[in-house]
Length: 174
Image (cartoon, rainbow, N blue to C red; front, side, top):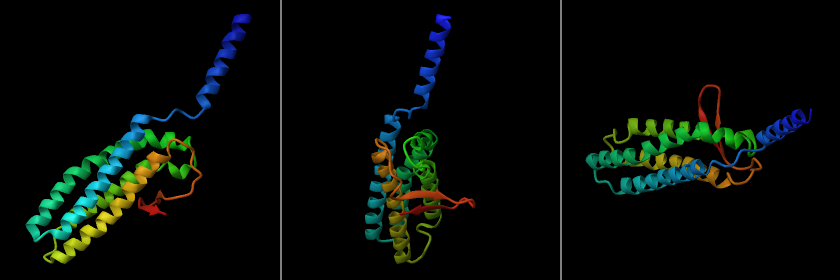
């Protein structure tokens, strides 16, 4: 009887431990931050390069360099979503588990931009598109960094987040 009681107590103790919030996945959190920084830096450099580009050839070269830096970073954040979102749900409000949402939004914006970037015969139009895209990507990259920074503590639910609507549209909400 005594052994059965010990086994029961041990089982209950293990079950109670399983209900506590899992420890932070530090490698994934650090990776989210690093990838957000890569996207922010690449977007800023792309915008600056775009402002000085003399023509279509320079525009396509800038876009190509940007794509080579940003696509792997977005794919990296997409891969982190399934690992970090469940963990974030244990740390605070449900709407903060938005890594997958923000990565999907980044990818949609990135693909939208790369489909039309440098296609206009008007250099000013190409520059304006790049500037608008860089602002959008900076906002998403800032959210990725913010999510990694707040991951050490439970958040109150205030602040920006990604929302995915039933039609698949993803929106940044401040």
